[in-house]
Image (cartoon, rainbow, N blue to C red):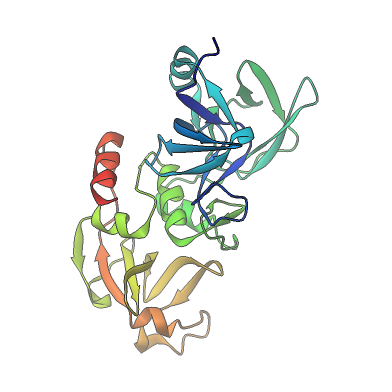
Length: 278
C-alpha cells in the first residue's frame, strides 16, 4: 500500500502559493527551495499545504514539491549544515548535469562550494554574491532595485511585507508574512513621523484599508520600501523638495503606526500569534 506523505519540501527554486487550485489564481506567497510544508489535502494536480516557516496556507502545483516520509522529513530539518542561503539567487549544477535555481533565502545545506540537495552536491556556476550583510539595515539596502512582485519574497521579485519578512529571515528573525500580522506582532511607539528613529519600521494605511504598506525608516524622512521596486523615498512633507529622493505624498499622509525594530523570538510564538489572527 502506497504511503501517504504528510510532509513535503519545495523542490524547485521558487514555488508559487496560490489562493485557489489554479494556475491563473492569485499568487499570495512563495515557498523557497528547501522549505518544508505539511500536506493538508490533494485536488488533482494541486496540493493544499501549510508552510512550516510562517504558517501560511495555500495551493501549490504537486510537481513542485517533493513528498517526504516522516523519517526523511526529520533528517532534512535537522541537517547540521542546513541554513538560509545568504547570497543572491544563483544557479548550481550537480554531477548529473542537473541544474537548480537557489534563491536568496533558500533553506538547505550550504557550503563554500555550493549546496547539497538530498545527498547530491551541486556546485556554484559563478561566484556567489553575498546579500546578507552585517546588520538588518545593511541587508535591506542590498535589495535596492529589486522589482516589486505581489506575493514575492526573493531578490527575483518582492512585495512590501515580503521585503520586511525576508530581510529579517536572513538574520534568523522570523516574522509573519502579511503586513497586518506584522503590525500586530510588534512593539508600537507612535503614529507621528517625528516620533520615528532610524531603524524603526513604519506601517501605512490607504483609504479603508487599515494596514496596506510597510517600510524601513532611515531617518531624515526617508523610507526604504518595496513599491514598484525596492527604493528610497521621502515621506516628510517638510522635506518634499529633497532633490535626491522623490516625495511620496500618499505615504506621508497615511502613517498608521511606528514600531521599534524586531527582535529574535521563538519561531513557535510567531506561528501561534499568526494562527490567532487568521
